[in-house]
Image 1: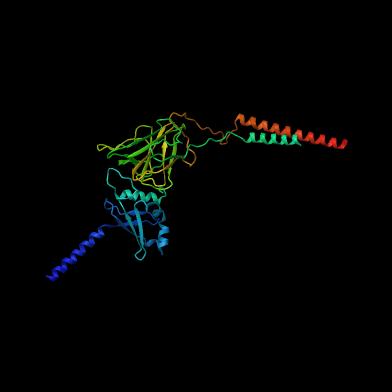
Image 2 (image 1 turned 135 degrees about the vertical axis):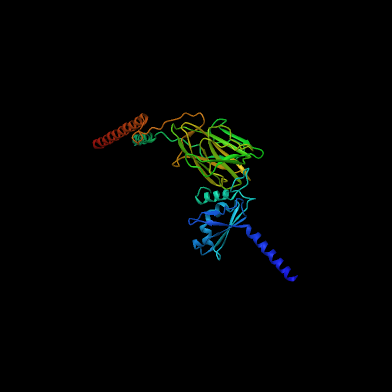
Length: 127
Length: 246
């Protein structure tokens, strides 16, 4: 009986962990700094994680400087960023319920909507 | 001495007359709007060049699929909300197609506001549950993005044709925006109000040719300078003679 409870507890923890990870999806940062959120699923996840090891960012300030244009344009409009330099990761948080980056329409927001906005920020078309 | 000073002043005035060519006119841009339902003071066109409206219900307007550039942008219309909007009508006053750049700037980002430009002055096309209309003529917009503090897009306006710039509130606060319309090189676009005459720009040999009035002023100035020099010379001769007599 005890071992069954232990197995059930383990399975429960495993399932919860999977549930949490499902809220975090991958993102890509191209060599020239364009951020692309994974669009495998249409709906927008609250968090994306991108590998930034290729940029060799040695400090938090360097990371902020490199992604400054995104931070300047989007951080007060629904997208925020944190950096985990130990893991060479950038975490991108998307607040779909309180964002002013992508206009609302008669269809639900999709990841591509945000990718379009991020691309415009990257190209300097949106400030 | 007083005569000499008056002559010098006359020469200076004449030179200024020569240099004063046809002065450039002031620009109506930027046009500032607070999206308050009041026609902006600097917008010069008579009604109904400027319109404002409120949309109710789940309806909306089209935008382009991405940031548009001349000549146009592809349209998408899932119905972007614009519960408040205003439109500014203008006309391309050139007898050739003109690539314009619509530039909106704001001191700070506020809420989500959207913009697009379409040809003509017809009513804004609205999304309905049974249809998602798009402008079949040239259409420009920055794409499906909220405007922020600085957004611009290009679209080509046919020769001697009207076009309308749309500004609407999509979500959250409205904002105070400055509107500027530039040509492809960032200079002043050749635009006017609906109904304005269209002009053909002529360039002779690539160099501006002075007008007859400017030639006349130039010659008048030369004559005055000549008279002034002769007068000064005569006066100096007279003074020299008077001194030698004494």
